[in-house]
Amino acid sequence: MVCYSFNNVFFRLAVVKLFQVLSLRVESFLEVLYFFIPKANKKTEGGEIMPLSESLLIALFTMSTVFVVLGILSVIVRLFSLLISFVEKRKEKTSSINNN
Amino acid sequence: MFIDAITKLWQDSGFAALTVESLIMIILACVLIYLAIGAKFEPLLLLPIAFGMLLANLPLTGLMSVPSNSEEVGGLLYYLYLGVKKGIYPSLIFLGIGAMTDFGPLIARPSSMIIGAGAQLGIAIAFVIANLIGFSPEEAASIGIIGGADGPTAIYLTSRLAVDLLPSIAIAAYSYMALIPLIQPPLMRLLTTKKEREIHMEQLRTVSKLEKICFPIVVSVLCILLLPSVAPLIGMLMLGNLFKESGVVERLSDTVQNALINIVTIFLGVTVGATAVGTEFLKPKTLGIIFLGLAAFMFSTVGGLLIAKFLCWITKGKINPLIGSAGVSAVPMAARVSQVEGQKARPGNYLLMFAMGPNVAGVIGSAVAAGILLSLFG
Image 1 (spheres, rainbow over the protein chains, first blue to last red):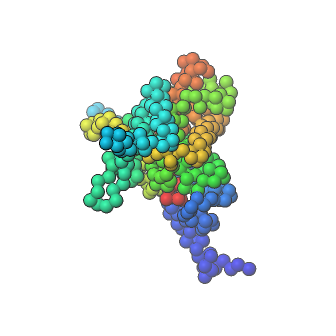
Image 2: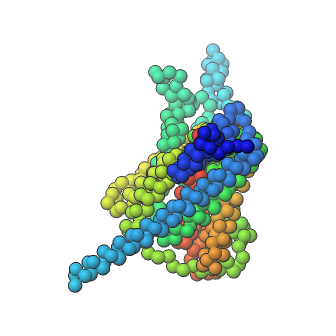
Image 3: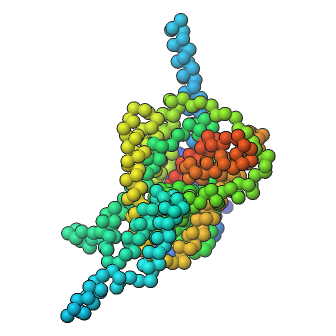
């Protein structure tokens, strides 16, 4: 039976990876990918071909990361727009009060 | 004596050194020159590429010769090519594109980002197929990026991952971008119903100047923090846009969107073309790249359309799915195709501004995809 204590090397590594993922850097996501598919990190020489399963996983990973990054971007842009319009309205309100 | 002199002159001339491969490449260069001038297929880039190809395949010119030591002088195009090899030109082109792009439609409707992400589907599919038919992962990634429909990004990634494939990938990417009005409409009609194509979209809200100024800063910070490898592309794109939107550096904005981008386009085109030497270019691999590039392009269009259809369904018919095909980043040609198809379905239906949102999101999306592939295989 696998003991999930912090002394377990595998578990400790998994926790470290989890924290890296939480740090929201895509390179950390890649580390996780390499952790599960070590071959994905292997530099190919002399036209080495990647197995279908791995290339599918990398394609899936690429697409999902593009979606995540652009999704986050769209949310942040929306939030900024709201914040800016709020600030601008408040500014207008203040200036109209001052004029009056 | 006279005969010897004539023979020597002949042997020293380029005619004697002409090979079948170089002859084929010279003919191919002439065809490309015709396409650029006669058919106006992306002439701004295709013409320098084709002429670079012509120059490089004329024997004994030494234009691309590499100096063997620090004392020796290399060929002119060899030095200019360093800008491609080191990834300088694509970034400078992005600087100019940024200064020419209006992100207003994207800021007004940020959900367009999702369409821009969906339109990168071709990159993933072409990557898998390329791997399947025997390309190495680095080559497959470079081929896949053709699906992003973004010339500078394709050149940037290929120069880093599979420099040998640079000429064929650059030519395929720019050729398909020129063929957008032929490739996309059949897919658009196939994947949308007449009712969907007739959807009239509500006017976009006005975007304030402050929003437009904040946008490049926010996108740069977020994208580069998430994916540092995209800094040369996204950073330059957003710097160019900040020049334009700030309104305080008009001279710089004018320079990057005119003089600088034109100069860099000449250097990029000629040197990329000059790498297409017959012995390297005329290989079965090139045919594979051309086929895969087309597949990537088509799947990207399909991806964008499917996401736009999904958004149409979610919003209960407020989004016309035709804007989905504009998610491939060929700015502004893909958006124009959406506009034309929209008008064909319903005269007076103006989709251009709505399609510009996914269109510019596609530029960011393909740069992000390139950054991921670069992090994986670079």
